[in-house]
Amino acid sequence: MNEKRLEEWLHKGKTESEAFFSHSDLNALKQKILQSAANGHSSESSIVLLPKRKVRRSFWYRAGAAAAGMLLCATLLLTVVNRQPDCPDNPVSGMTQQPIQLDDSGKDYQVSFFPVEIPQSEPSIMSVLWTTDLDGQSEMLYTSLFESCNELYPVSTIALPGASSRFVLLTSGDSARGFIHYRLIGYAAGTITTLWSQDYVPDGKLGVQDNMLIEQRSSDKTQTQVSYILPYHVVDTATVSLPVEHLQLHVGDLVIFVGDSEEPLFDISAQTGMMRRVENGSDLYGEERGVAFVASGSGSDLLSLSKEKSPEAGHLTLDILQ
Amino acid sequence: MVLAEETQCGCILKDTPQTVLLEQMIDQYGSRVLKLAYYYVRNYSDAEDIMQEVFLRVYQNMHSFRGESACFTWIYRITVNLCKDYLLRQGRRQTVPLVCDTCGESLPEQERMFEAAEGGEVFSAVMELPLKYRTVIALYYFDEMPVKEIANALKVSECNVRARLSRGRKLLKEALSAKGMSI
Image (cartoon, rainbow over all chains, first blue to last red; front, side):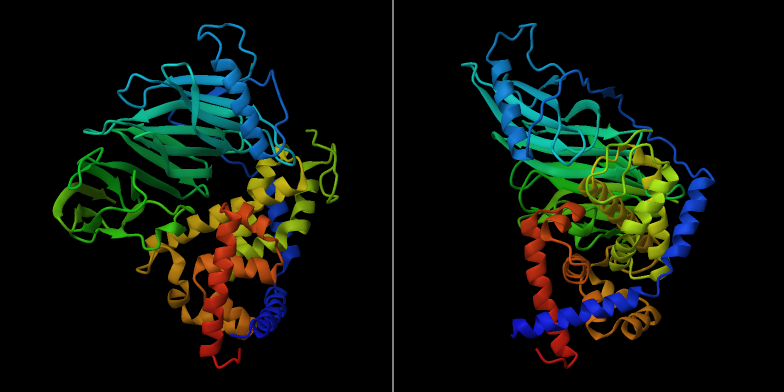
């Protein structure tokens, strides 16, 4: 194949693109937007299902690039945790910390949140999940940057039946600007896996109910999208543990299965077809992981999880309302 | 409302009224937002509607803008999210695949003809590519966006963008060859 020729065609395509979009009346569009803005177009603030608190900003440090910021956070964190646990003069004021229980090992796990400033970006929050071993040595397990936000929500953990470890939900956002970020991470055998990650969820609302996430987002004032995010856990090679066995939802809602494995272990089929599988799920909110179904019609359905040697691995019955 | 001092683009000035700022942002980014929306939804009037919604959201939240790169990345991400929500709603209204990875097959014939007639052979061939390839190909070659900016806007890694560009080019070669265009 002639790459040079392709480049020439693409250059032609650029010219064609410019011609295609030259028909746009951007001035008219601009006037419509300005008119709407002048008429007081406004949106409701996000109403988040979880209580929130502001991150204190009494202490700022410049972290440089994101990687340098993580390193600095880790260094400061180690300075803090190597002191006595009840030391009152924590040198990193502005940090928020919450203990969590990740497994039944008795180890001490903490999630810390640091306000960070990154050049050419807006104030953000760095989250760090870490633990200390019996010798007092700390180990950082997971970090994630929440961009352009200043509000934190309590960390939630989800424990599925039969699972020795838990899922952790980290959430942040900016209610004034109407978005949330969140991470659902799984922990097993000392390994952290990001199961589901979303940023800038518009008018985002998030809750945990019956060990599943319920996410609501709204791109305009008349349409909302509800997603039920079901983490699953493989109990043994043949059985999967789901948070619920029955779900009631509405037409248009999404059901998204996310598991603690690199590859989906199970085939998931719908009995009546009311639940339609979303093909090429990587285009769903930019996420590569997860198997998604959309409720396409009212009625009942049964989603069956199976694999080659275990055709009856798991079931989820659904009642779909209009 | 007080914003940070302008440094690069000439569009963010201290103590500038919000409507003036909005107008400047539309002048500066409006065309790019409209194009990105079209690359996703491939419907001109819907792309215009999305563009309007994007800037109304920008207007509501512009008090937190600091610098040009963050501003534009944020605007692009709003655009991407609105486009994806649009595609999901389209999937609920039609009996076609919910997500437009096969959008080339499901686009109404009238709109495809419009695209081919008004855009030309190469442009329409790029628009026929699956969504995740046509967006990066169009942003990189038609809009001349750097890989890093594309990665920030689409919230994927730079490696991912390069991989999609590579795969997209291969698919495009096949498509152009099938149209009888010599490669």
